[in-house]
Amino acid sequence: MSNVLSRVHDRVEWVDVAKGIAIMLVVLYHSVLLLQQMGVENDALYQASMALQVLRMPLFFTAAGIFAGSVVRRPWGRLWSSRLSLLVWTFLLWSVLRFTYFMVVPMEARPQETSLLVLLTAPILPRSGLWFLHSLVAFFVVAKILEGRVAPRWQVACAAALSLATFSLPFLSLGWRGIGVYFVFFLAGMHGKAWLLNMMRRPHPLVFVGAVAGVAVLAFMMRAFEWTGVAVLELPIRVSAVVAGFVVARWVAELPVVSPVLQYLGRNTLPIYVAHVILVAAFGTLITTAMPSVGDALGGETIVVVAVLAVLGALALHQLYRVPVLRCAYEPPAWFSRSQPVALPVPAGEATDPVRFPVTPRLG
Image (cartoon, rainbow, N blue to C red; front, side, top):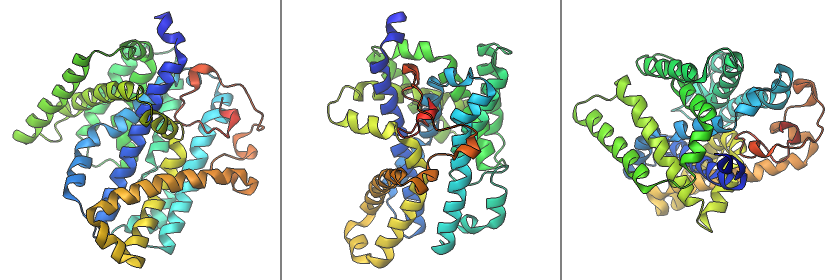
């Protein structure tokens, strides 16, 4: 086991690849939805995106939990200044930026984006795609409260029970439903870190085959017997999908061209996550209205083009941190985090932190 924990470089690669895969699937999902609302449809992409809902966020939150342990063990003050302040700040700021964009360029099919009530209640009742940040705040806070008070196995067991219960409560808001469903994956990643790293050191092909078979069998049962939404099946199908996703990420990490790209995306998930919906909407509107001939030529492939442009655009926007007045878009000001922007060494085990920006040294 010590050999596994000492191979920081190896584990960074596959975890970053997993996050890169997850963020690409998230961008594609929102591209499918928004472009469909603009009249651009691709049934194959839609079906694939809907099927991959069992993988996207579970993979994301499990990867987020893998290196959350050292963060949770920090004192409350440092936990706030190094982690929570960033999540809270970006959630609040980008909620306003998203509201502002859709006020200027409204979408008839998305009236909630321009609802002042939705904006004002977002910290309590998140209903936009930014709920991921809201959930991470809740996960870190609850994990900190539970630290040393409840045994890890009971934390995961109770979170699994909460997940099963949440699947039966469709009336919950998008954000609170996400908290209920995905907390178990965050805790599993955090407390199962050593086991996951060991399993992924040299994953046996049968692990992948078994995980994929589990997803296929459960999906068939849910479809054939109309058991979609049955809680007792929803959780295990996602667990199987995460195992399969991690094995794929571990294998892809060995590829010379694809791996570096996905690692880079995996290390920059937050700037992509906060900006991509605005960019998908902007590029989609541009192509479907100002450049209809391009949209007609591309057809359903417009969705993929927009998704790629959104990722590239988000990464380009992130470079605005070089302009001091714009740095606040990706980094909380000192008065908010109550800490000075002093460069601190980043422990090796935190190198794959899902919310670490290369230009935010105090996150270390």
